[in-house]
Amino acid sequence: MGRPAPAGGLAGLRDEIVAHAGCGYEPCETATRTVPGEGNPEAAVVFVGEAPGATEDELGRPFVGRAGKLLDELLAEAGLQRSDVWITNVVKARPPKNRDPKAPEIAHWMPVLEREIELIRPRFIVPLGRHALKHFAPAAKIGEVHGTLVNGRLFPLYHPAAAMYNQTLKSTLFDDARALGALLAQP
Image 1: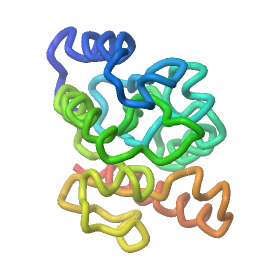
Image 2: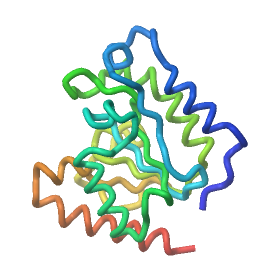
Image 3: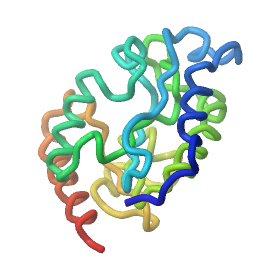
């Protein structure tokens, strides 16, 4: 398990994310709502995507669309459920038309993600896909490091959406989820 977070820390951060407005960055100005992370504040594992999609923007929760359903299956394959982990994104507001976030937008939200991870203090961080991975290990390539432990703390997985568009990745994703479960079972 992760170490206990300071009391009120994540709740205060969540309130700050939900209230965020007027910064001038396009995703923050055009999104229906900002999307804070959610889950177990003492999670041993934090899953990090790039940015909310349409369903997440509508509901204000991370990974609740089609990719989220696949993420739930991957969690089960690893012997986990949503209540065991923390799920978040690098960028907390949906970019227009689901485009990739721009570098200044990512830089705008990175301190928030860093605070989130510091408050949770997870044993492992699971970047979901190449975009999330590059924020933790800029030189790493998802195709080379998925399903392996990188820098002692990162366990990158392909993004669940990638497997929805490329069915050949689905079995790889499930194999990698089982490898994550085995890693978590180790002391």
